[in-house]
Length: 212
Image 1 (cartoon, rainbow, N blue to C red):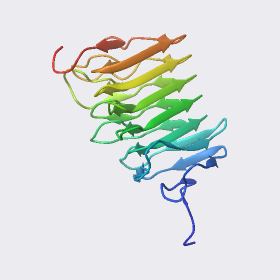
Image 2 (tube, rainbow, N blue to C red; image 1 turned 60 degrees about the horizontal axis):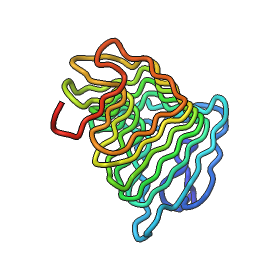
Image 3 (cartoon, rainbow, N blue to C red; image 1 turned 90 degrees about the vertical axis):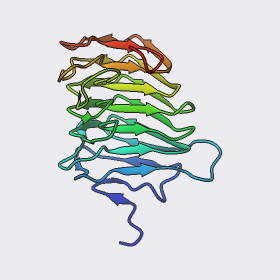
Image 4 (tube, rainbow, N blue to C red; image 1 turned 30 degrees about the vertical axis):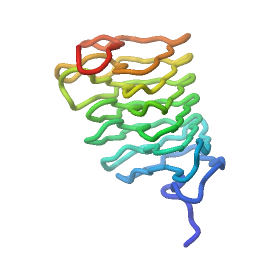
């Protein structure tokens, strides 16, 4: 209908400020459609939650990431499995690019996502932040060969990223790659978590941008 605010079982960006969306167990195919969320005109983040359950799977039979967070967007995902996200840009499943954007993931799984940088997640704004609690990152990949890659997660431009009680399994190693988590600039908190370094490049790389 004209008032439908869902696409393939999840929320469209408009009309969904400050609400909780429940995604029952099942597969939700984004089919190449990325959802961009930004609350322009607001001076602080406006929160929306997407609540999954065991068996809630966001997949992609096309080529796109799932969500991009713009200015003042705050998204919380709980118990969602992201798989098959793919983009020629950065952040295979999720990209956090906007000022004051806030991403929180609780009990989520990221596996089999692909991007130029940040196979699963890319966080790239000095006032943005991403928080991962009890999440798992498995078999994510990047298509760019070279430095500051981040097969699972890239934090850049001064953003803040926190991992608590997370597991980073072996990611896919393709070409000359460095690190499953790459911190180009910004803050990283890594607590009570486990990293299994990939075959090449290691688990973590921290640098200030431009250098190796």
